[in-house]
Length: 452
Ligand SMILES: NC(=O)c1ccc[n+]([C@@H]2O[C@H](COP(=O)([O-])OP(=O)(O)OC[C@H]3O[C@@H](n4cnc5c(N)ncnc54)[C@H](O)[C@@H]3O)[C@@H](O)[C@H]2O)c1
Image (cartoon, rainbow, N blue to C red; front, side):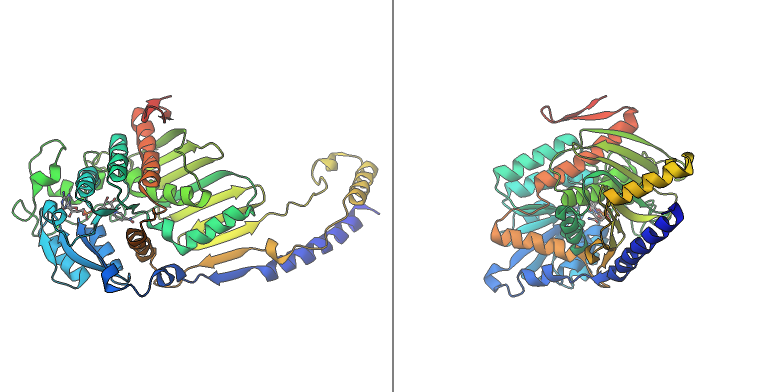
């Protein structure tokens, strides 16, 4: 048999398999069963009464998403900026009590749980006070503003026996549950590399939010906002665009890396902190006085895989996570998940033998075929699979439902304080490496980041 006839026969066999794989490829619309399956009929005595502390963009978004969660009732809202009281009441469609002082909310006996959606530099204080007041806590991501904050928050929650959930909602998403199922099935083989990015190309994406026309020292409690941060005269840019400044936020790492890292930790079942991180990046475009880069790219070492995470505010790339395994590839791109197997059946060498004399090559190929009877075809399992979520699906409501169910059941959430802290440490490692121009190493025993 000469090479060309062998190749044609093999092509036909593989071709049949490929056609089958194509026929097996399918798009599946995932059903949002989790929220509706959770506890649709909650008795009024089991209703969880909650308040939101921080009703800015995220607080209002959470309040709106809470409207479809069964068995809960918002009874109060709190924010340092008065117009956000009205925005919160509009979101929850109720004239609930609104205050600037969150301690008034913590003192109330009818509040079982609080949503903490304040700026990152306030998470620790409000969280600790809520634990002391015996409230369960849904705290927005990133859990901590500093490494020390996270461990203080864990200690407080566990000492006070509080139910905690951190707010990276992808952990409760039906799309991520499917990704975890595929990962756990072993169909990816050994995953040694994971890549994630979240790229945006707009003023809003770069946090250049408009300043509301009524913003003033009369409508905003500026001193309370500063809290322990350096004292400064009233500055609405810092108040509304706080993510740009290290006194209050953590830039791209705290805003976006933490979502990607939380999703990856959830899917891979990772319960360690990355051992090391190296970062590169720069401030190329949004030179408006901010402290943080508009491009950051971090390479993390985990025990079983390496992870590259990037956020770029200079191109519209959307959100992406790729899991690269020895048997297949899984991609999450925005709200679509694709699994693609690799043909890992043994193959004859098809490149270097073209430097051999023809007869030797043909003998090699014949012997190879004799030694490797071909499998008949791919099975349907080996085909490409694509999954997506229904239009209007909200993982935010699912995440809230999981939290409020934990409040009732007293069973820890998946994205509990330890999980949230590990994900937040990923963003602190990235920033430490970037700003100190060094490899950042996690010292778990000392609970700190060190150089090199
Ligand atoms: N999970 C997500 O997808 C997601 C999305 C956006 C924001 N977030 C997180 O939510 C939090 C809030 O972000 P945002 O976009 O809503 O910011 P924002 O600036 O719109 O709102 C923050 C609000 O917190 C208030 N605040 C700060 N300290 C307070 C205090 N001690 N008492 C009462 N109110 C206080 C401020 O007055 C402000 O109105 C941040 O931690 C952010 O990282 C999460």
